[in-house]
Each structure stands twice: as C-alpha cells, then as structure tokens.
Image (cartoon, rainbow, N blue to C red; front, side, top):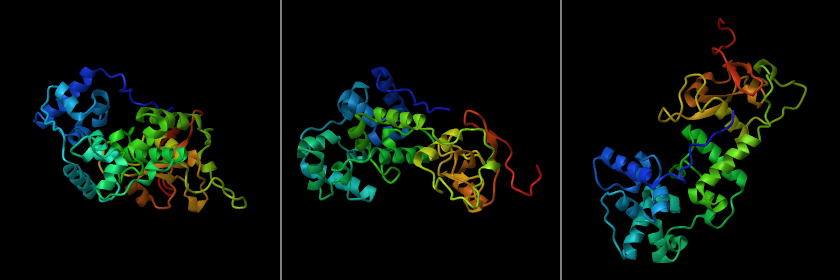
Length: 311
C-alpha cells in the first residue's frame, strides 16, 4: 500500500476558501475570527489564506467578514506581542510559523517594520532560531515529518508544525522544498520508493534471531520503517483500535511482536502499532496480533493470542 496525499489545495478556487472562512465564522457565532481560531476549526490554514490573498485581514475582507485593519502599528506594540507569544510558548525562540499561528499581527507587518524577522525577534530581546542559520539535513526533516504524522495519526497541516509537537517549523520545510506541499510530496516519494524492509510472507514465528548470530538490524526502527509500520496498520493501535486522529491523547508506539528481549528482530513482519496503554500492558509478552504477511507486504490479522491462551 502506497501513501496518498490529501487533495492539493494550491488550485482550490477562491470561493471555496471564502466559504470555509464563512463556515468557521458561523460556527463560532462571530463576524471577525482570528488566525488561531481558523487554524483550530478551518479546513485549510491561516497561512494558506495569507499566501492567497496577501494578508489575513484581506482574506477576511474578501470573504465579507469583519476586519480591524490598522496601519503604522507602533514598534513597541509589535515587540510586546512578540514577547507575549514567546511567553505563551515558553521559549525565547519564536519562528514565523509559530507567530503566524499565535500572533495578533501578520508576519510581513513585523518584517516590514524591522527589516527582517531576525531583526524583529532581536528587537524583542529574543533569540534567533539556529535553524534560521543552519541547513537541516533532509533525513532530519523526514524524521520529524514521520514522528509528527505518527503523533497526529493523519497527514500534518502546516499549522501543526509548532513546538513542542514538532521539532522543526513550517518555514524550515518551505526554505528547503519551496512550499509545504512540495515538502509533503518529497517525503511521501521517499517513503514510497524506499520500501526495502522485508515484504515476503514470512510468519511472525520465523523472525526470531539465531542466538549464535549477531542481530541486525538494530533494536530501534528507522523513521522509514516506523512509518511503514504505522501506514500498514493505518495509524491505529492493532489491539484496541484507537488512533490519535480519533482519540485525543493517544500516543502510538512501534512494538516488537516477538519481543526484542526474546530474540525478536526489528523487521516489518515482527513490528506492530500499539498505543502507549496497550504497549505498557503488553510489556515483554509475545502478542500475536498478526499471523503472517501477504505477498504485497500487508499483514493478515487474526485475534490477539498470548502463549497459553486458548485459540
């Protein structure tokens, strides 16, 4: 099974965007909505609106909603809002993505007032993110993407890339790939074209290492193998059926069916998705959620069995 991205919003008609703004406003019972409110309730993101229409206020205006556009905002007020966002995040490093999500003003407003985003954060007594000066390796970008996708149980939106959920901000991906959509496409292409993990119909019982031979690969799965396990199990705990996308607070783990401590290998047929609760309850007991693997790499489910239980 290949990853398939959600529909691309780049060619979405303006009327659809306006309609979604209106829907959120009606849902909240107000004629003026903030970027944070829209990011929490909207189908798209505030950044999408800003990029399409030039600013958040312009998007509201064109959608027929109320705006309170102000000109020549004093620098002291801009700095105060930067500090407020910093305090809310609990960090002295504020990225453009984080400010776009929590700030009262548009990022371009601060960039224009101070000359650049780094100059704005320095004026507020904050630190410039080291990511703004260093080039993050593609492998690190994809690792963060995989962790975020697994934590959400769905395709991430650019508004999801905020601390502490994401280690990297949206603008890091945009600088590297040109757009958030391009970053998603590059990640999915890498995951889909690098399925080098075992996909033969090997039963779980056969993926126990020989005691006289060194074990390979290592215990912890790579981001790509972890993602393949999540994808195969549809980002859902195979024991209880819960997912981060449907149950708030659920955290997914990649678990060894035949425990590592009992010789189980870190290979696709011997890995399964469990939520934190089920994984802790299972501990190091063998848990045969899957009987085997089909020729296309899909696992054939059967009732969970622990040795000693009746079939």
